[in-house]
Length: 348
Image 1: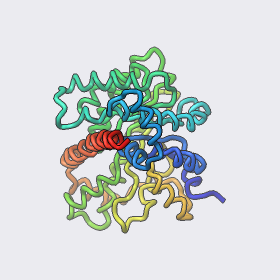
Image 2 (image 1 turned 30 degrees about the horizontal axis):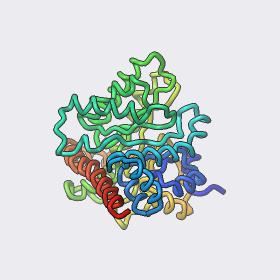
Image 3 (image 1 turned 90 degrees about the vertical axis):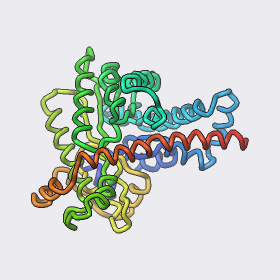
C-alpha cells in the first residue's frame, strides 16, 4: 500500500521540496522528492537554527563581506542538495533532479537604479557565474521586465531556467516565448530545460480582498483555475517542438493560507503532471493524511464557475497587485539575510 506522497508521484507529479535544509532534503528524498528550490527566506531560516555557525565563522575568517558570506552559504547549501538529487538527474537524463538557485533579489528592490537593459545584463552575468560547472542546478529568474529581458540570452548560453513570480498568462507567455527564442539559438537543444513557477495560494488571498463578491463555489478556486489554464497552454505550446526534455510548469506557493483549508488542497488539485514544489510542512501534513492522491490536473470546475471567475476577477489588476507585493517579498528577505549575517558577525 502506497503512502499519500507515493501516490502523488505515482500519478505523474514530480515532487520538489521548497527547502534546501539538509535534514529535510534527506527526509523528503526518502518520501519521493526528486528536486528542490531555494530562496533567501530558506537560507535565513537555516542560519537562524545556529547549525551553520561554524561555517559562517570560517567564511568570516576568509575576509568575505556580508554579501559574500550570504552567497557562499547559498551556493554551499544548494550544492549539497544537488548532490542528493544528482542521481535522479542522471537517471532521467536531465528531466528531473534539479535544485533552483535564485539570483540576486536586490536587482528588483525599489532602490535599484538600473534600467531594464542593465538589469537584464546583470541577470545574465550572474546566471553564467552561478551555473558554471553545475549539471543539475537551475537558475531562478523572476518574471519582471528585467528578468524577462534576460531569459533569451540565459537560455542561449545553455543555462537551465526556473522562471519565478509568475501570476498571469501575460507573464507566462512572455517568459516561455523568450526561453524558446533562446533555445533556438543553441547549436543543440538536447539539454534545453525550462520551468515556469506559477504561484497559486497568493491569488486566493488576493481575491478574498479584491473580489469578495465571488460566490462560495468560486472563491478559493482562482489560483487553481489560473494555474491549470497555464498548465494547459504549456502542454499545447511544447507538444510539437520535438524536444528531448520536458518544459514544465512548477505549481508553487502550494501551502494553504487559510486555517479552514485542508493542507492538501493545492497538492491534490495539480496531481498528475509536471512539478509541485511544496514546503516541508505541507508534505508532512499530506503524508500524515492517509489519503490516496489521483490525477486532477486536467479537471476543471463547472463552466458556470469558470465564467464567474472570468467576469469578476480583474486579472490585470491581480497581476499588478501581486507583482508589487511579490517584489517586496522577493527583495526584503535578501536584506534580512544580510542583516542576520551582520548580526552573526558582530556576535562571534
